Length: 334
Image (cartoon, rainbow, N blue to C red):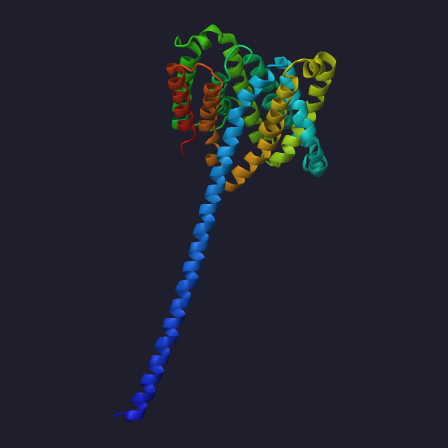
């Protein structure tokens, strides 16, 4: 038998141990709760930031088509395209010093040419020429064909593996494209089929560029590649502007010359130069699949701007672009 003093001592130590344990458990719980709460907030914040960037990027790229249309008020289609490239080149040129050593021209020149010429130079001229006859909203809808051609070219030229869902997506998207190009409702794209095909050609150029970047520039920082690609095409645009266009008189003599020039500056700086950096950050923060969601939102933004600008959009057009977007979803589906 233990004495009373022993049990008193045991009880005191037991109570003390319970208090210490309870305190430690409480402290652990509070710390754990605080840690998980901070992690949750960080994840929510990161997710919110990614969605914010995605929406901004979609608004920027979706607005490119209405900005081209506004630029065409005072300038010719070739002038709008050349100004877009030249202004973006001037804006990005200060970054050349920082990214000069990030490129091995002997190794990377082919990819840079594909990116510059097919990813920016040729499409800029094709888009603006098309918009002299077709609406900005239709141009934005047809732009959604880019992922379809990207998958096709990757499989045909670079022997990239193509899944059954991607093959189905290409087929579905092409059905939507045929409907959009050959529709009778509204009559716009059937009446101006040749100009609509210019947009299709531009998306094909984008596909060439995307595959070129993937196979020849995957090891290169995207900003460095963009700066160098504009260094290749920018001087060509400047030479063309000052030798073969009358953009200066259009700027100073047309009643809306300066306002159109302002829209082109927004198109060049925000829609071309800055969007490259924004898109690169989005890929790093949320991954390529999430970033590819822009493809679904850009036509919606383009159509929205078209409606606000008084463009007529038929039901068949909306159904057709919906089919194209379904095809793109199947292509991006894991």
